[in-house]
Image (tube, rainbow over all chains, first blue to last red; front, side):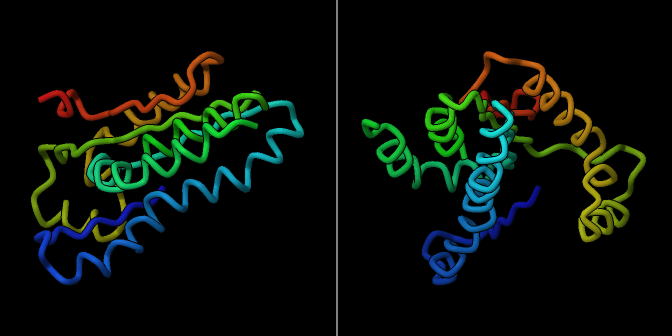
Length: 77
Length: 85
């Protein structure tokens, strides 16, 4: 479980630099864990994945990425 | 994280893989801990010492999700109701 959060005003130039780090730790890490675990779970007939996020990170990361994931996950098989 | 959890839940549903999330909110440190002790616990990454029962409450929510075979794409906020204020 990990999370990063830097509290800065929106206009602070470092906000742009923070962005990738926040998404890497708060969101991409969860994706990579699921990506690594899914094949093993599939082989054993199923499984459970539980993601963790503090809800400050959740608000920040989830809004931006929602449209991308919804689009890619609901395309016809 | 909510969107990622929902997306993975959809994508992996056919493989019988349930995907959910726990979102612990801010919590108060135990009353017997002074400020210095809390700061030290935060620096040491000791969530239990810094935030009292947060870890065990998140664990209970996790166990509920592990026990279920019909919940997927859900995010449980473990924050004492702060998100509805």
